[in-house]
Image 1 (cartoon, one colour):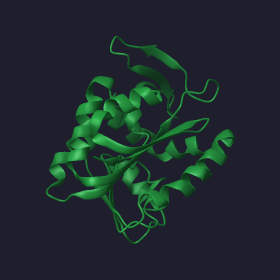
Image 2: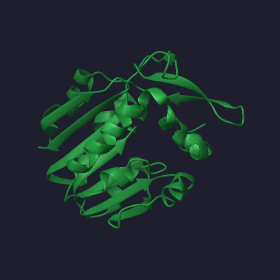
Image 3: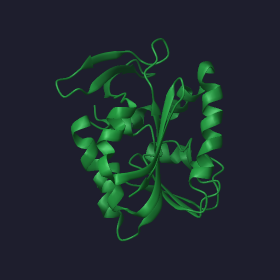
Image 4: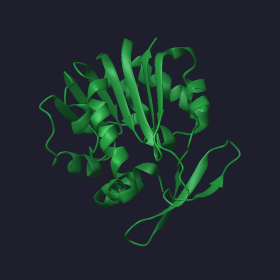
Length: 213
């Protein structure tokens, strides 16, 4: 099953992951931190899913284009109380160049980095950066691996990508790519593209923020 199909089937239950008791303090801290990153900016959100992070990131933004490939997850995002600056659009994270001539001065992706193969990550970041103006602020939030809280890693392939076996409510089990980069690994991929880099580690999450050089 493709990642797209997996998340389409998981759409109605996706936000359960945000209800884990041990993660609540961190989530509130991240939700409070995010608006200040993009205040006054014109922001592209990639793979917004059900829109959990959209109202927080977009709170003080000038404009916010939240994109996702799945109509199932976007339908849930549309039920949320979103700031007036938000526009939702169905768009493939792997097709960013087709967004057209618009250039943004901010970009955000929550829990997308970990679903990109290591060998393809630099190329995907090039696509993202091509949509942005110099000096644009970029932020990623993603998971750290925490035994007992994270889904166990089922295997690691020859390319160094790790995979989890994830059950859905219908009883089916799906193998899903999920990488857990270290700070050094993440920064090495950015190379010379970033300045004013900020890396924050919470117990269950990491944050990477930078200005596009």
